[in-house]
Length: 579
Image 1 (tube, rainbow, N blue to C red):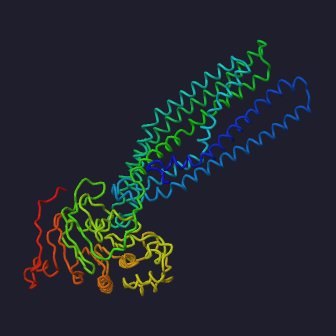
Image 2: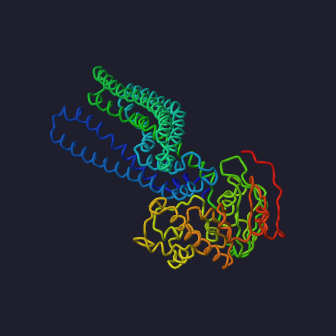
Image 3: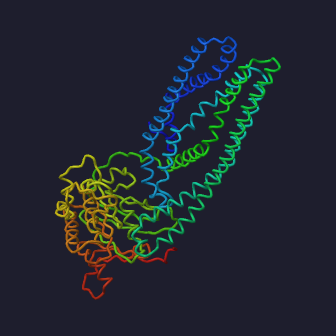
């Protein structure tokens, strides 16, 4: 049973409740064993020294040594269990987080730090593996230690309880005063990381146009703001932590003084002087440790909140019933498309249909919505209104995984992934058929090029395909789009980086898709690719301006041509959309 969106983290931790129970048991045993030092000192002062018995001292020392070793083993096991819990959380939720990271730009665009969800999961896992969570298991044992101190003498108990109340108040104050600064530090950190990542992606542009120093100034300003917020948080946590440590040391000294006074008054033995001080330090240690790790605790809590909200916003894709392989037509019903995260309509009122074996050329001036329409056709951007159908079934009736098998897409900005040429063409399908990979490469006219590489299809292309030229990346990406003979292939300026040989291979690939009764949509700026199309859609100001056969539309655009205009379908234009 799948957990509700947003509850995946809580469900993952609940699945580890047996491990948490084990940690609680080990914490209890560890806290009991921590009495060893105090009890050893108590017995030395009250039993060994008065009797001057060396055998008793040796026996007690051996027993204490065994107990100390046992405590070390228990603490080690507890730490390892918490580390394994963090790993289990990552294993359980990591896939959902990766999917959310990869889908997030489809909903909000490329805003902020796109890797923040992964960092949030890392923060939670690291916190679970740190000493911080151990304090949550040690806190319930504070009354146990205070009760033991009280049993030694009520006056000592009252002093220890007063110290505990003050330290708990300091912990609450730390929470109150660090909440807002920590949130501000996270937001400024995202801004700083975003500038650094943008500079890394555009290193060539910065170097070529001398923009590096100016971007550095912007980054430095964001970095100073981030460091200021971090220093503010550090000052608060450090201040409260210093007071807490000083108070704990003062309390231990006070316990020594009170114990000495009680001994002078004849109300306690000399062993209580040391035992009371040790027990007071141990009783208040969880509070001191909590303040010391407060920054990591707050960071983990904020990461938990952000991650839960993100997973609730991006639920897992439903798995609808598998539909038959499309093979008849593509229908666009009056769709409206806007960029994710931007409150602006880019494409509006597009309505047409294509039968199998058709090739559509999409033309128009820059900014007319051609690429946005292409993203809508492949389901990357969901229409705000209207529907896109394959064989009568809207795209949202398909799961993303199944729909992708029937769609090939070559975006305007080609992006390949680190790996082999074969893996990129096969879309990283672990069960890919080598014959299908070669067939796709041949269809894209890139097979001869690939086998000329030092390692052929096993050549590593590097991150983003940096080992290939722009034209080679585009041709490999075309082979990826053709892999598996998808029914609909959308190509956004597929010849922008191609030479004459590449353009010839592209034209042959388009004709081959048409011959096998597929549908091709080509966003074109260079007119030579239009020789392969059957229909032309001209976009203007985000709307359909013309749609019809190639001859009819081109005859309208170029009146000197003798093309037939019988089946031209002019579409009325609308006022310019607001920017």
